[in-house]
Length: 173
Image (cartoon, rainbow, N blue to C red; front, side, top):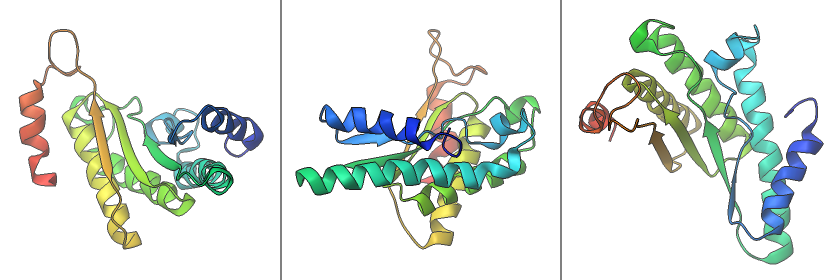
């Protein structure tokens, strides 16, 4: 929709800003290697990420100008369906694709990067490292937010406890 029907994506952002929200997420939760590879379009990660961020940025800027209240764009980086711990995709492939995802979001004007609902520690690490690499390439430092999915048992989908997640991701800062 970011490319074929940007008017629909724009209308969703407008509806949120119209009721007074301060920030919106880009329509890029599925703009990652794992999700796009299922449709044989994984080479479009950057393009779709940039388009999603650009649409949100344009609407945010319009509402900022109209109201005088700063509006923000959170660049959504969804987990996809491939878990490196289970061998679904190589870690390096995912990391590099997350970097492309983040580079597109940055190019489109995201104010922050949001790694969302990861289920696998290696997947999380790939996304965070990819985002950091993209910021380094762009020469920019944006807030980097991360959420992990925790089951009712208190572990991530693959059984990792949240303490292990914190320890594994600690070297990333």
